[in-house]
Length: 461
Image (cartoon, rainbow, N blue to C red):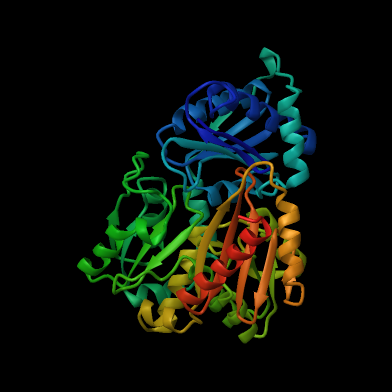
């Protein structure tokens, strides 16, 4: 059993003893803390709740909604929804915040409470710590019987979200309709199975082949949209003679594409392609996290904009985007953040912008992919003993490469011309994650191995 308490939410495995997993007692405690914080922050007593389709969703939803009622908070329950849809709904409803019940790409035994502020954005560090303090001290008070909150079931936000996407000036429904795309989708039996077909139909796509679109939470494969988990989608794209395949994770904030020949477009390149299209029509800056591909920087600078890197984590990317007034941003895990709609990763807006780009490009998905700089990322980790001083270790590595361009805003990232390596400590395990990138797999792996050797020498391993 696992329970992880972080600044942006609470996630864990279902079952076990209280405090060791995401049990009913833990769900009630942390919901109470968040509701108390939300009332104190905004003075409002309304919270939006939505969930993905995982098996534990109904149980968790009942506990969350009932607890918020007990605090005297009115609940707008979107039912089966997506993370970006809840983010859109919070400011629309002028609510105090939102709770999304999803463990994102984690397997079915996991669930989580993702916490949003009144802007529909993930809460930041200081607010997250305050919520955790309220939970730790049980510093909440429930409402009297006459002041209990009310529940409103609202199924309208599927259409509202789609309508907002269609209204964006850079989304060209006519061009997508004319292209007559044939598309295969893999929605991992979660809420993407409801939202993605509806979006594609609204965009004028007539031929949609569905894989795993029954929102029953029985994930047919590991739900993270990585190449090794998209074998069936790749095969089906070729079998059906489709123009492309589309995969989303259970809460529909990550997006990956498959080319017409069955090869992966590359999750890292989802944001690169969408940014390329946006920058062709709107000059400006871009942001991604430090562990994302350099290709976004290349595309941005070619378009006359400036690229900026943020610490890993959606809230950090959003803060940097606001700071530099970025026109597009996101993360290399297939997360597209388009601020003209809202400040959150959104596969729906990513799909709409990508298909418009592809329709106007007029060639195949594989040709589009080949038009971008080709980089490869190698992902490694070193397990350390808990007593090791990771900060001292990173300082010594930094000192060794002090003549190279580097940053310490999130661990240590060192640049070697167009190659880079990023070292960052895990927040949950005694490990250092080591990401490296080069213009070939061999170069990326060799760079990672070089840094791993340096670390072992410093530790005398």
